[in-house]
Length: 183
Image (cartoon, rainbow, N blue to C red; front, side, top):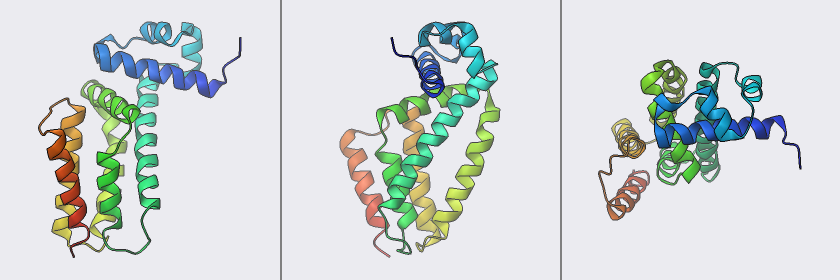
């Protein structure tokens, strides 16, 4: 039997908590349920997350980490100083997420309804991204339109509201990227 590192155990606990929230709802998120789902003792869970609030922050940390990694990866694909760089990266980060990213964001959306204080960090991240996109060389109205379109799609997806088909989603992504080049 291989011993798990503390980081692996912590990640397993967060994943178990996310799965409980997504599959059963935020009301079913208890420390006992998470410990059982993660295959750790309650004491082991409490070592990593001494309170339910700490566990919620752990989920929030994971969601923010995944978003920042995705956006950084997309920004790295773009040449510095080229107008629309941030907007193109934001579009791809919003449309091309991995299944884990979608699941953790769905969990976060459900948790925020119960624990709205988690929105504070996201507000700060969002404000920073907004300012980067507005200063990115595109007309301000276009940059805002792109961001709001991406955010509307993202929000509908994490809430489970299928507002557009797969084909419409692909066409929307292509059109938004085109707006970043037609200056």
